[in-house]
Length: 136
Image 1 (cartoon, rainbow, N blue to C red):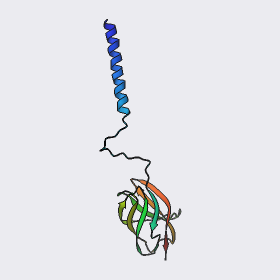
Image 2 (cartoon, rainbow, N blue to C red):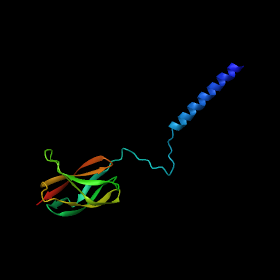
Image 3 (cartoon, rainbow, N blue to C red):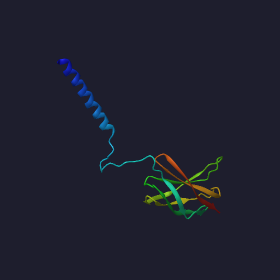
Image 4 (cartoon, one colour):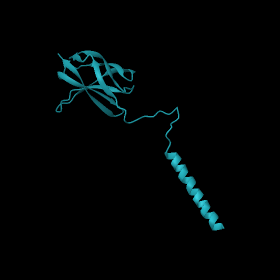
């Protein structure tokens, strides 16, 4: 009789352990206070207005995109592989997840032509096909 009780107790303990592990691993319903952050969500740029600026000017802009957050940084990158340069936006203010404002101070020594608009957030770089034209 003691051997049967011992086997039964061991089987019961194993069932309880397996059930506890299973329910701890299969939690699928976060509480309403939990914020779920998905690594698949990526910021993007869809447009910038104006899309041109002159050397030596400060150019205020409106940028439209997706998943824009308050910690986002906006850059112009010239894409020159030999002499790559960046211009960082000043006074960036995210007005919604799809729009922000800011300004670029275009240095007098900047390369003329198309610069790519890029956003960076939390160490991730999100390049775009949107360009900003630097002119004389």
